[in-house]
Image 1 (cartoon, rainbow, N blue to C red):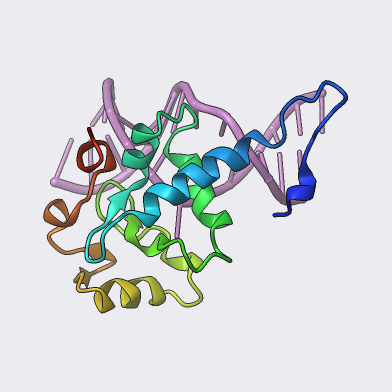
Image 2: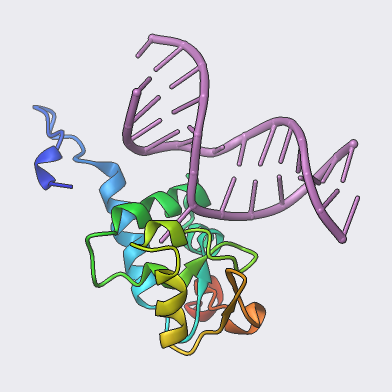
Length: 125
DNA sequence: TCTATGACTGGCT
DNA sequence: AAGCCAGCCATAG
């Protein structure tokens, strides 16, 4: 997505509101420790996104080209790898997680509750 | 411009 | 317990 998409007007108003929270989402995802996972809902809640968890997922889709955003560490509230089909092959996401020490069985993170890294808790101050 | 769809969730049946 | 339904809002057709 190019920044040429700016909707700058004579008013000097906004330029792509979405981009901003996409960046915020990336910032949070980047802070997820290796070997841990987080959920779309947790991120949405932490950033107070009215848009909700669905948009966090959308942000992940837009994060594809980025090698600095560990999207594989984001799963749904049940610990299921709901986005695995967005990684080259259906097994790629699982492989990435297992390579970090996160066991996955039947597309679900093993011992999920224990692996969960909730930003609104971990980053609380 | 309007409808359908979705890397989601929480609540109700 | 498993599944369906309704909000959520940005994109695509």
